[in-house]
Each structure stands twice: as C-alpha cells, then as structure tokens.
Length: 199
Image: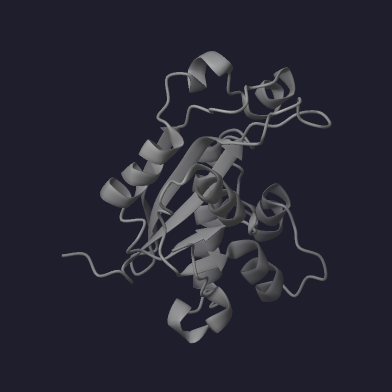
C-alpha cells in the first residue's frame, strides 16, 4: 500500500482566458489539468497525466488557443469539472498525496471553482508552492516564472510552455532539482506548506 509521503503530485492547470476582460457572464474555468507523479525517494518522475475539462460558463478564445494550443473542439471532449475532481481523487490519490504547483494560482483556481460549482475539493491539505521554494533555494529577490527557473537551473524546457501536461512535467524536474540541492524539505517540517482546503 502506498504511503502518502512516498509520492508527490505536481499539478499545473490551464484555464479559459482572454486578451483583456472576459465576455459578459464568462468566468475563467479550468480546461486542462496536467499532473506529474514524482517519487522523491527514487529521484524520478514516474507518471505523466492529462485531464481535459469541459468549461460550462466560458469558451476557449482565440487568444487562449494561441497561448495554450487548446481549442474549443478539443476541450468539448473533456470531463466536467466535478468529474475531473473525482478522477483526481480516485485515480491519482489527490486527497492522500502531498502536491505542489508553481505559485498559488493553481490551488486558488481549484478553490474558487469548487466553491462556485459545489464540486468537492480533490486535494489534501499539504500543498507546496514550488516557485517560493525555488526562489528561497536560489537566493533570488524576485520569484521567477517556470521557464526562467528552468534556465537558472540549467534544465531544458520540454514540450510546450502553457500546456498543462508539459508544464507539470517541467515543474516536476525543478522539484527534483530542488530536492537534490536540499531545498525541498519534508512538508511536515514546514507549517507554511500546509494549506487547509474547503470543507
């Protein structure tokens, strides 16, 4: 049986977006969830997953397609947000495993969307802001974007930036690099990494 501390879920989401303000009545909604499973003990990325999510209160703009490569036709084949949350919990141990994202956007977007839709928040309470950890470990004054962090760490950007599946894969590489440098401490030792989700 998997021990909750053995594996880490690295999550990156893409959401509907616009060049400027959203159209009247539209809200930003998750359209792709990228998830990479990291085995910190082995120092490996061991799982790569992509969940497409069908938006209910917005559509994919031309700007969003240019940024992410995702189209309305593609996300129309996805799950509902509630179904995606259930899948994260059932198949990816989201409620049991600690998880990380680059910054707090992803965590906040899940919180907002769960609150707005009544979907059950899929993650447990141990979340780590990998951008903050990286900034501290490298002694930086400003928090870098993911692509800049990869350059600073001497790592390649694999795949397409602003594609959830690829971004999660790249963030997981940064997490492993931080762990090798001793900058990825156990979550239990860092109270700032504990986030209390919606009940």
